[in-house]
Length: 92
Image 1: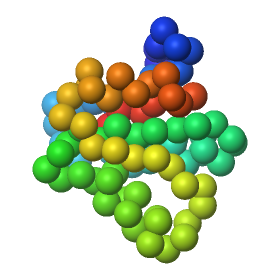
Image 2: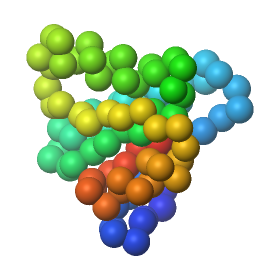
Image 3: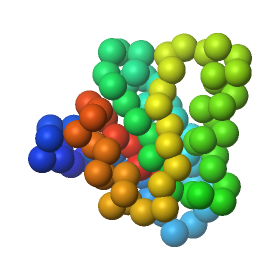
Image 4: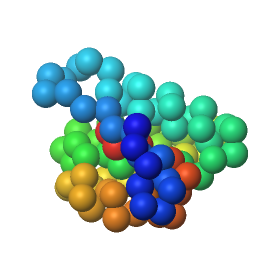
């Protein structure tokens, strides 16, 4: 975990290997942080698979609370530019 200049906590789940649970951990942390009143965004860096983006769509379709903001980005740098708008930015 690191703290950005704006005070947002940034957490990144990274691994060269797929299927190790990065997206599962990212979504679980995001859900719990949002449930506790924090403004949270998941930055989904896998623009082809979009696991977290699809998770977000399903939750919206089913009316699942809390709502967690999820957006697809090509790079971590693009995602980090949005950190100041949230309490927690999770990079998946």
